[in-house]
Length: 116
Length: 115
Image (cartoon, rainbow over all chains, first blue to last red; front, side, top):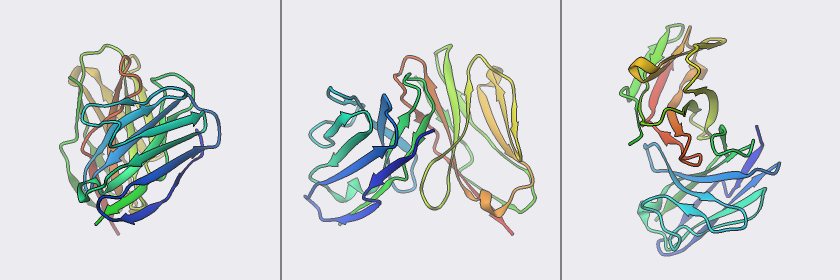
């Protein structure tokens, strides 16, 4: 597995602002993903963060709302833009360590976001 | 379309009881992967097990065991002699070979183990 850290661990933000969440891995990984977990709900994939190219977004998620950067094989950011209370969720990054898409995914500790 | 169903929303047991968490999945793929994750109150998601579609052997790891049955599309998880530390939300998840790593999660089962 890999050691994954996320910053911030939690934040309280005002409506209309943006927050950038960082995900750092202690080793180079090919596959990196961002998930959202709304309160009391399951996890939903937002996008796959591709190194050197644009992220691949799932249905219902758009780049303008959730821009993602992946500058190298150990780091990615997810920005939640123009936030509303509906964006209050836990945001988790995950990585697959072996480099194939069907690899087991290991998750970071998550970022708990509350939007007022 | 792919789908994972965890029909049990909440389960409450007393310590030392055995408990089984159900997971039923739907997929059209012949190659797929099944997972169980644990999410304790602290919020992080902890990987427990992965099963490939071509490997139907059941697995035991300490007090944990998993029963994979393709005939019923089920991948159930049993905790033997439950402990308070087992209290958490447990998620079953599915990944299809052609989906680029996307995990489809069930709704989760919240397990409460009381002393």
